[in-house]
Structure formats: C-alpha cells, structure tokens
Length: 212
Image (cartoon, rainbow, N blue to C red):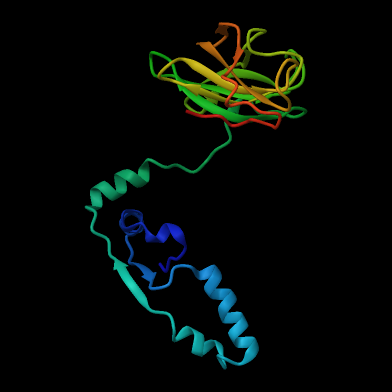
C-alpha cells in the first residue's frame, strides 16, 4: 500500500495500517502530493518533464512499514468491526428523518441511542428522542419531553456518559441567534429543565455538534 498526505507522517498510524492489513505500507519522501501534483502538471505543461515516466522516476520511498502484529491479535481487532447494517425497529421509517445519533449506556450495559427526528408525536420541528438497542434492534422510540424539546428544532445531541449531561443545539426563542447550545441533566425521558451553556460558547451563528 502506498500512502501520502499529512496523516502518513504518523509512524504509529502507518505501522497499525500495515499490521491490520497484513501488508507492507510504503511512505514516500514527499508526502505533500497535492502540491506536488500541481507542480508536476505545470512542469509537464512547460516541458520541464517530457513524460509521465520522468515523473514516476522521481518517486522514492522514505520508509517501509511491515506487519509485526501477532496474527491472533490482528484477527481479534478485525473481528471488532462488522459490516454496517440498518437498525431494525421503528427508528427508521418512511415519511420522517432520524439522524445525528449519540450513544450512552444504561447501568446494565444496554446501549441507549439519542437522536434527532421530525417523526410524529413530537413537540414540533426536530425533537430529540431515545431508543434502546438490543441485538441490532431498536425498541419503540420515546420523546425526551418538554424539558428538552420545544416547538423549535432540537438537533445534534451528544450524551456525556460520565456526567449524565445531554448537550444539544436549538433555535428556540431566547437564544443569541441561529442554533445555540443547551444542556440538560438526566437520562431516558427524565430530565431537568434544559439551559443554555455559558455565553462564551454561543454566538449569533449556528453553534452545533458540541462534544466534550
């Protein structure tokens, strides 16, 4: 595998790539190939290089990363990733949007998925909902309620498992403009009243996708 770009400067990342693929990874001496490609095109245009073969001869290896991970560990890491499948249950359906998921955990380890949706039964616009996910199937979705949702749009939820705080953005009245960041303490459909986070994080623009 031949690599380039800024990320290829990271030796750990390149070694991990070689270990997972079980193949050699070759990093060239010049990794900034976007700028290099533009220079090559200009050089071809003015006759500095006469052919693509001249350009190919300039490529040189800086470092080769060869697999060194024990095979059993490599297979275990690969098994940790499965082909993406569509969640079963009522979270996905025709006529509405379900998007921007964030995952938390209940005390027994069950995954709880918070997401934004304009499905029926909400408070208006996009609301934040939750569903439990077991064996690839989502249970019936539940609206987080009026402590979190309003007739405006509530979007981009992020649940901080450590503190039990849900962060999200809303264009409800009373903000600084656009979507502002709010937070609420709780879990499932039991929440304290949502409040805007400190003013230094919100602006007159759309402040969205907040994480900690």
